[in-house]
Amino acid sequence: MIRVLLADDETLLRRSIAALLDLSDTITVVAQAADGAEAVALAALHEPDVVLLDLEMPGMDGIDAAIAILGRRPDQAVVLLTRHGRPGVLRRALRAGVRGFLPKSVDPDELERVIVQVHDGRRYIDADISASAMMDDCPLTERELDTLRLTTDGFSVREISARLHLASGTVRNYLSSAMQKTGSSSRHAAARVARERGWL
Image 1 (cartoon, helix red, strand yellow):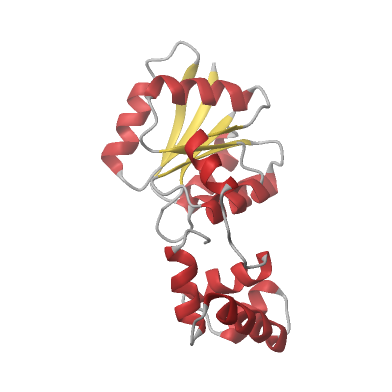
Image 2 (cartoon, rainbow, N blue to C red):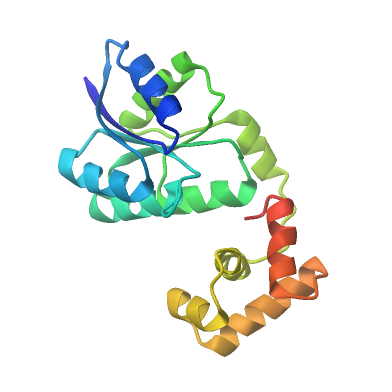
């Protein structure tokens, strides 16, 4: 049996997915988490074969939870479920080491197949999300995206500097470049443009 940890802050949806997976002859849900931090703790406790994470969770989102889980167990199979398959999010997920990326509208049988596939060491990215990423015309560098992402989280330049281990002047340069590329008058406006275009 493939042992799965499932994390989603929407209780009804989480329990519904768990009930569907438990009908499988090859999968059993060993634990459920209501947020990213709980998922990290339960992954350490249960050491599941596959971790299934909702991308949009309060506090610690699915990618941050995946980074924490993979930091402890680099070979852990992680699958992300999302309502918004933005190219920037896909890039972050793949850099983090996530093996599967699916929309929440996925058919239950397909979800089961993907869990088996990533458990076997393979990757699976939804075709529509992959196509969107391939057509991505984002002009921003990864560092510029990192600074804008932290801007949307409400961090100051000094706090962004500390989190990215960069000098404040370097962060300001990245933000200035991102503002120019997006035609924005402030870093917050640049972040808004980047999010609206699916780059974050």
